[in-house]
Amino acid sequence: MGDVQKAMTLLINSFSKYAGKEGNKNTLSKAELKELLQNEFGDLLGKASDPAALDRIFKELDRNQDNSVDFNEFGKMVFCLTVMCHEHFVGKK
Ligand SMILES: [Ca+2]
Image: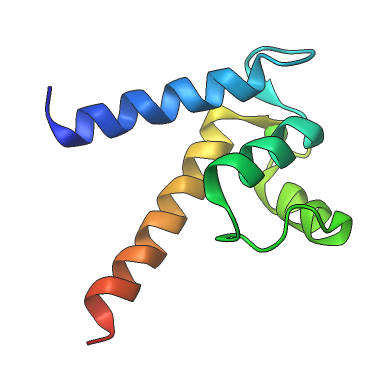
């Protein structure tokens, strides 16, 4: 399996792990998102333990405003972060 394929599998598995904790298994509630951010992203997105910051991130991610983050919405966030990291590593030398 290629590295990118491994990364995609990891991404899908991580999403399922947190999305499956309560309610709808295919979407992240705000509480599930908080756990995912804290455990998987550290401080990359700011402090998920800060309720105001968490609210802001959740609103930003929940594009269709159904009060949950589905894999499509989550994927967009990961893609944006990856682009940001890429710019950080490649752009600033
Ligand atoms: Ca949504």
